[in-house]
Length: 311
Length: 220
Image: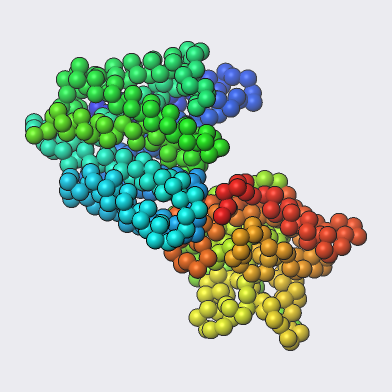
């Protein structure tokens, strides 16, 4: 596995260095003051350096590192989500439970690889008990809206995100002890697809995909991003249990889900009248702005691998 | 008169302030929005809406280390002065300035105490509603302290600060905070206009602070 990790890290360093150099050259040539797009591009690349560094550190701590990192990502994402929704005083205990019980317990289930409860804890027990607690408080003002928002918040920020470290619990024959690489594959392909969609969109984007939801998503960006991300997947098949063709297909499905995740996140933001989820990551917005695609891709990727590749 | 002798932070106060700012960041991701004023170490009175015990922690977390060391929250002496432990927390750890709202002796005059802090070059965090707002109203009417201080020391800047979301983080009667993102919006300084009446000024300051709320429809 060392060999594959070294190649991935060298590859990422090469891409980031290239990106920083290109951004520096563009900024040097552009008229001053720099356009907001260029400033934002530099901020985004700088944040990528930090994110890649953090992921790499977590990677070296293996299962511990990944479980803790994604529990923290869930925390940040849930915090952004709940901040945007309508909450009332009577929701206090449910909200506390979301942060204090649901996140730790869900990641404990990931840690102990208790698959049976991991897949149903949130969609069965939490989804039934959370509205029950809210009803017991007796405050029916905007009740359906409140419980729906709470459930969707937990679904997106905790349940879906926890499927990333859960990849470590899969038992793929012939791939033992290397499941960390599945996480690397998923994240590189999905985040790579986001970046590639952005680049293709900026360079060739003409036809808007869904002007009502997200003005920045174009057909050209989508197609260019998905095709190139699938190729990237095929190229990375050496770190996976997949053949190059399978890797391309899996990457295509994951990135398509990722695109839909971004679309849904944009629709929620538009509905709530905000541009970004938060401000945690300079140039990108909040944690949810960076993970919206991963959130939709992770459970589907997890179940594809589990169904077709595990025993 | 009760002369407070103020120094910059003791070790305990520095540790407390750094620790609480870190905690505030972990729970609320607090960040300042400078909307009309800029960070500065000049002498100021920061006045803010007050819904929870965490308010002044959030506000001071938005200040630099240097500003924090000379900025004191004004707190209720009836509550924080009651026992030795509370006094220790309020004064020795948080470096608050305690005032009694029901004062009797001349040396307890709140305005005099606050002026003596200002006269030593330090800044204040003041909650002009006078108490935590437990009502459905977004902001209670202001007490007159803000006006009196500004009349007595017109050179000190009055900065309105809207603390967002804290009423949702720590609602009435709760002691465990829900992690929600909070911002502190720092507005343009307000000052008593020439010949401006106490009441008119307080209402104007009130309206200025209320107008800083970035998402008024969100509050509940």
